[in-house]
Image (cartoon, rainbow, N blue to C red; front, side, top):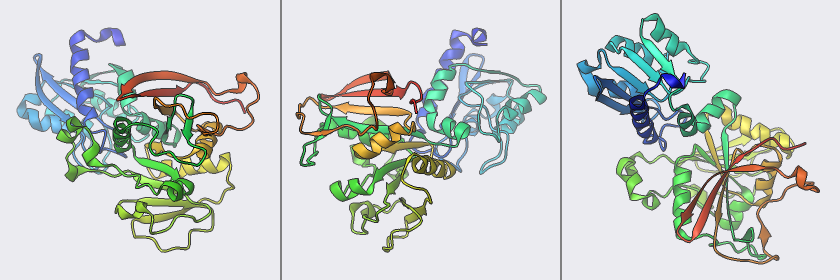
Length: 379
C-alpha cells in the first residue's frame, strides 16, 4: 500500500504529524492527532487536537478551510472517529464538508472506531488510503495505542546514573547526579506523560513534588504551550505501609495524587485532590500487573516512573517496562555506591533482559539513552 503514496503525500502527512505533536502535552487520555486539508496542491486547512472535549484535528482544519474543504484531500494522522463522544464523529464532518479523499496514517485501534470511520467514508463514496508514515504515527501515540490494544499504559522507566551505573552514594545522597540540562529534559518527559509513578520510600527520602515546572520547559515549548494550559500529570504513589504524610511537598501542588495501598488505606486526612486506591493483592508481580490494569482502566496512556532501585527492578522483572530512559552523568561513584536496579535471580547472562537502543542524545554534559524492550523476560 505504501507504494501508492507520492513524495508530496509524504510531505503533507509529515506536516500533519508535526501538527499532532503540538498536542502531546495536553490531549491525554485522547491521542494526539493532526490534520492537513489540501486542494490543488495547496494547503487550505490545518488543525490539531489540543485537549479532550475540544474539537478534533479534522474539525479545526475544516474551520480554517471553510468552503475550500469541498473537493480537498484530508491528511490525518489517525483514522477519523465514527462515534459520538464528547464531540461529534469526524468522519461525518468530513463527509458533510465534501472532502474528496482521506489519507490516514493508521487505523484507530479504539474499539469504538477500529475501521468504522473508514467504512463510513467508503459508504459515502469518499476514497481513502491508510498506512502513510504509519511508524511515525504509532510512535507519536505509543501510550494511547498500547492502552487500546492491551488495557495497560505504556511504561517509561527513568533512571539517572553515573558512568559506572550508580544512582546514589552509599549514604543515599543523590542530589544531583545528573546536570541541570538533564533535569530540564525530565520536565518535558513528565509533561508528556499521563501520570508519574513513584513510591512512599522516594517521597519520604527526597520529598519531591513530582510535578511539571512550566518555567523549566524549553522556550520553544512554552510558545505553543502557555502556562494557562498547563496539565499536571497524575502523581501515583505506592504507599502500602502508609508512610506518606499530608505535609509532604506532593500536596503543595493542587493536582491529583493517587495513593495506592492494599485493602487497608492510609488513615490520614489528605486534600480533596488526593484519592486512595486499594489493590487487594500481595506485593509481587501480580500486584504490579493489577496496578497497571487499574491505571489503564483510569485512562492513563503513558506512565513515567521515577523511583528507586527496588521498584525499577520489580517492574523490569514483571516485564512491565516498555522503555528505559537513562541519563548518564560524567561521574564515577565507586563500588560502594548504590546500584541502578534490583533484579531477582539472575545467575546467567542468557537470562538477562535485552533492550534495543532507540536513540541517544547529549544533554549538557550528560548523555541520554533510550532503550525499548526487545523481548519478554524468561520466567
